[in-house]
Image 1: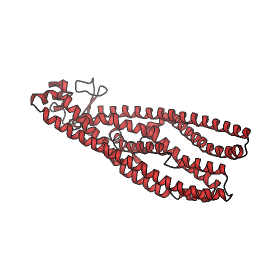
Image 2: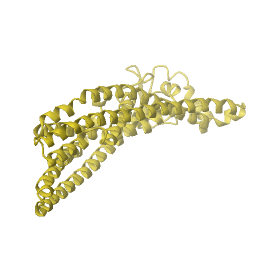
Image 3: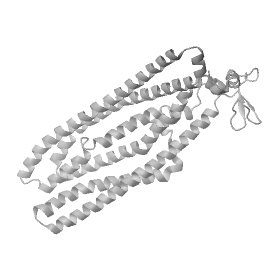
Image 4: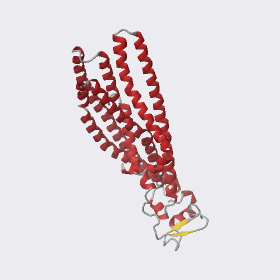
Length: 371
């Protein structure tokens, strides 16, 4: 979470979009919570009493709030995605600017594929998390609180029984988050390794062919690709196990509440409309019915958290090999060594002899300065 907080400076230019998106989330959750109560009232006032006018009136209210929910969902998705695209735009600019200002010694050790993965896959994971993941988590939190309050007002016994399953859900969610986030981090690291291998072989294909190393390079890439495939399968297996477990908890609690609510209806302590509204609220709250939204939020949170551990460290913190306080700054136009903005910072020993990276770029410009 501390790493994600470091991204707040990228959100400042899009503060209005972010606030508007969260307002739309509130309206979306509020409209969602009103519809089950209207359905229950329509059953009691319209169907049970055979009153067509009441049924039409409540049907109109249901359509109105459903339309409001749709408009709020559109605003939530559009505003949130617009702000997330702006954040990813700023991250890519900051990353590119930071890489351009690094020293020769850093680029001698860094892999181009690793930098490309950070600028594409990791930034994209952060965009999904900040644009959809955080908003979905906020929306699910509002729905959980709102549904709990509505159930307590309707029938406290059924509400307490429905809440009994929450500790197990919280425990499973925490276990799932702890397991899936390292898996996504491993996947993103392995994607960077595969991208690095591709970049090295494309840039140095002449050397590979000159020394007859095609078979060895294919085997090296196949090994890295197989490891990436296994990492993806491990993450997919964890996601596949989580969904049925949540469904089992949800259906088990629903079965017990069905028996108790039937007893309450037959005893006259609960109306048919209240029973319909109660189970409509459960469909909103329970992970068995809101599983798709919850799974998306969980995936984006895990991937975004893993990406946040990689991108800000490269953008906001100077890595090893960056010129320090003893560097000498030379003015003038940027030469063929790729000085940024017409000025190149040299270390204390850089003026004694040409840098090896510069020699490789001059002797073999087609390799992009790397062997």
